[in-house]
Image (cartoon, helix red, strand yellow):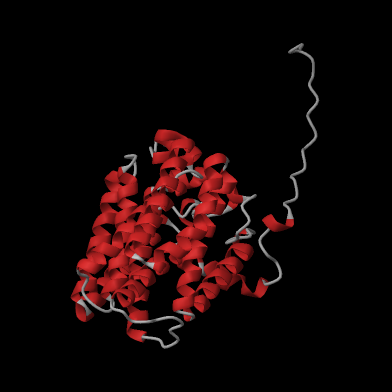
Length: 351
C-alpha cells in the first residue's frame, strides 16, 4: 500500500437491527416506569429464590415425615411460617446483593446478573439496600424466634467468609454452598421444632445433592471466571472431572435417601439421575444447564404435591420474572430452553 495515495473513507456500516427477542418489549410502554423500578427488586435475584424456598420447604416437610405426620396436599397456610420465609428470603437476598458487588467484573464478562454490573442500579445504592435487607430480618427474628436468629446470623457469616475467602478455592467453594443448603434445611425444620438427631440424619443425602448441584453451576461461567482469575472447581479441574464428581454426589445422595427411606430425596433424585447420566457421556453446556434446571424443577414439583400453594408462588415468581426480563432487557428468561443460555442473567444459579 502506498502511504501517499489518498484513501477513500469506508462507508458507514449500518448497525444490525436486533432480533425481536433481543429488543426490550414495546407492547407495555405505559408500564415501563414500573418495570424500571423493578430493578430494585431483581437485584435480590428472585429467580434464585426457587432454590431457596424449595430447600426450606424440604426441611419443613422433613420434620413432619420424621414425626409420622402425613402432610400430602396440605392446603392450610401457616402465615407465621410464611412471614418467616419472607424474612429469610430478604436476608438471603442481601447476601446475593453483596455477592454481586464483589463480582461486578466477572458478572460483566459472563453477561449475567447485570443489573448492578452494568449500572442499572448503582453499587452505592445497592449496598445500602443490602444493609437494610440484612438488618430488618435479624431484628424480626430477635423478637420472634431466637433459633431462627441463630440460623440467620450463621447464613450471614458463611456468606461473608464465602465472598471474602472461599470463592477462589476449588472444593472449599463447594463446601460454602453446601453449608448454605444445610442452614436453609435447618431453618425449614426449625419452623416447627428445634432440630435434633433426626434432622442431622436426614441432612446427609442433601449434603451430597447440594454439592452436586453447585458443582454443575460452576461450568457455565468458566470463561468469565478464568478471565478474572476466579478459580472455581470447574476452572481448576475441568468440565469432565466436575461432571463426574457431581454425578457421583447425586448418586450417593440417592443411595443415602434409600437408606433412611426418605421420599423427599429418593423420588426427585431418581428422576434427575438420567440427566446426570447424559452429561457424563455428553459434556456440553446445553445439557449441563438442562440438568441444573430440570433437577431443581423435579424437587420443586415434588414439594408442590405436599404444599400446593407453593405452585402458585412459583408461578407468580416465574411470570413476573419473565415479564421483567422481556420488557426490561429483551430476554426470554427464565426459560427451560438453553440454546441461548449465554443471555440468561441467572443461568447457572451460582452465587
